[in-house]
Amino acid sequence: MSNFNMIISGVGGQGLITLTQIIAEAAKAEGVEIKTSELHGLSQRGGSVETHIRFGEKVWSPLVAGGTADLILSLEIQEALKVFSYSSKNTVFLVNRKYIPFENGLSEQEVEKKINELVKGEKHLVAASDICQKELQAEVVSGIYLLGYAVFKKLIPLKSKSMLKGIKEIIPQKYLELNKKAFELAKKNG
Image (cartoon, rainbow, N blue to C red; front, top):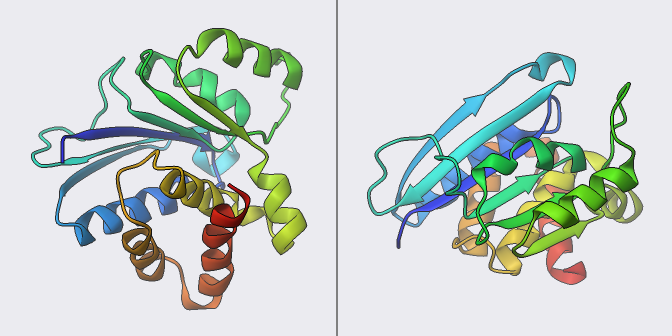
């Protein structure tokens, strides 16, 4: 496997660190080297957070260099714009349509327009929060849903059984079934 570079962006409390740990476990299950880095920012206060994930045959650094991301997974639509510098024309964007307004910020329509202008490659704008709330009454698992979407659409080169193993390793037992349902829901809806 050649090296795969991924950025997860969002705001504090959306589970970015959990998703990073799940991906790390899945990569380990497939026998590839993995390095991650967490840039917490204001994660405790709902501020911007990003994690870097690199896996493959030989990975030297945990940080994704500018313009080299293979996949950018954003749990909030505005956060996708904040990590645009890591992308190239080959980067795939997987973006949750979740919009969290802030004072003097762009409107949801302006953000989507900007993403459509900037992203020249493949992009998937998915209403993961809405889908998870409607189908599972739990918006909180939208990140797991997006992870499933990435696996089933082959946007990330890891197998679903490895990702499920990662989910079982990281998610506490009392939330495991809900998270597995969110992951599988992406297969059905994707």
